[in-house]
Length: 291
Image (cartoon, rainbow, N blue to C red):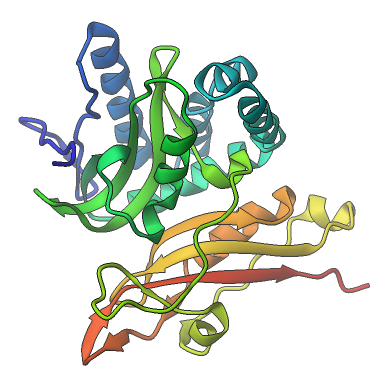
């Protein structure tokens, strides 16, 4: 059973019912951290587009303090050192990305859904949780946090905020691409019975796009002559809108612009045996400087 509970008397804001984050044991420290994160999410949803400074502050609070020591303590030393180095190299782009992520989550109707990473179904949209769990050397409670709609079986539809762990008295966000942990499984042969999103190659899905928003080339990247390709792993909802996005690779200076553009894309509904289905695919966003 996934760790999903409803908070009695939860306060609705922007159509979202805020739920507390669950730990294996709710110590006073855990309860304080969960309440703080719940308050941060409330503030983020209230601020949305009007208060970028608050969004940045909330995003900073999700960063792991003393991350080099923490990764070495939680994972094997060599693996932890690699993850800590990748995390540190991505701090600046993460600082720019997290406010955008919070704005995007605020647009989703539903509730905060918390799922224990150990109990997530084995499919491509849970690959990051599986990867982190497999690398841990100690006991660390990891939760996937989403904003959307759920029942007793877990998340049915929504947008994923990321994986969170209790670090230094507060919940911090973990993101596999920023830790250098590879990318989701590649599309392969489909099973006879579909148990998750339909995997479709990026080139095939590109032909079904209805609305493509071009990314805004960051001025700093232009000045520094930074070009390249940003790859995103996405889950497209049954209505053709973006349900879940995560950056797989690409120059850090270009990632925010790619994320901000792709989250607005819209596709034709994909049908399987006459029924609409979710689609699991990748999107490449190209940045080229015209000289």
